[in-house]
Image (tube, rainbow over all chains, first blue to last red; front, side, top):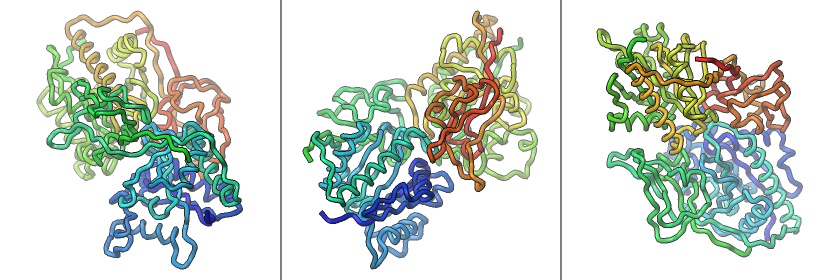
Length: 292
Length: 292
């Protein structure tokens, strides 16, 4: 395997997700924490204006702006389209070494623990996920294979991935999750350092993977207003099995709405605040065991 | 005691606090739920534009705009200053009966359960608080006596108060808290109905009151950046005693900061998202027992 030369840690891709913002500020202040002998590490803030204003974004979601088309289009004038080009220039400067790893730090109001989200089944990432989840049961691994065309920051390089931490409200810091995320980042950097030294940490247990299979919206009126809430029996139950006939939503009038699928699924991103506007009440995933 | 004639229930005074928004929409759709024989009930949305945009406010905090000075000043041109005047006109129309009760529905990222916040020690409100906390231990009663000059909506009438519900993130609905808040509102309306009928519900147990004594900001740099988070041992511990020497904050560098006061206090609004910009990490309160 080729050596990893440059690792970028990005926080505040969404401006109201404070865990990543303050971790990156800490790493910028104390670079020794993220320096490793065999590669360069860069800590970068994403949506600067949105961070300042405590918003997810100013005009559009920065983490949907990293499409090839958008990055090559000089006409796009929104703050986020311009910032995406700046970030690409920093991470992939012309005639200089590219960042070959991007760790994109996010937080969520869903109870996702410490989730790693990969674009594909890259063997190195799968081994990383297997190792991290073997040393910390709070670590889960998701595969979202659709993501290449969605303009996610992590799609800029082959070894790009998201760390998604929750449950934590937007615009607050949860000290316990902050510290767990920090330790997870150090474990990631140490893993790459070991790989570069030729000592790939081994894991004996199989990796549990959650693969995205689709989304479910809230029940809505013809005018688009939501008519129901996540059911109390499903709230905060990310990664737990949802079986046909289990309650899924509770209408404002107090009526249960049940899951009508034909097989067991594993909901994630349940009740993420930023997804109401995207028409997503939760993602559904399937669970796999993988020997890596 | 004089009869209560008109009760107003306001949701979405802050546009990103969805529990109140959707309860008021439900009451507008099914007015029978809040109608009682002896008084009129009105359900009203507060900051319409902010609700639409999923923000706390557009230009300034609507729930600081209800000062006498502001309401009488025709020069003020912000959306919220104008909306405050509209709301006053609806609740206190000229030559018509005033709303003599205002129930202002809020939610918070702090673990406040179902909190009633009163401006003063009005005997009817204290009896209401004693009754509600006797039938539901999740109900807490706070007194914020400073509030008359602060421009809070509830200060428009003598029997104005806030129901503050949490912990729930901004811009999401928590079905369990939605239903508990709904039941609490019905209990409030039933209580007023009984009062009007001359059957004031009796409570034998004393009322536990939490009186605001001040605020504590996050430790900050000279530039104003926060330097620490709520300590994991204090997070979600609203209404629990904080003793001199107990940990209060954890710096980003990992150092504990301790409470240095001279006596036990009871922190509330711990880690409320909207208060970072106000320079408030938590309110401190003192606990009293009151026979009502």
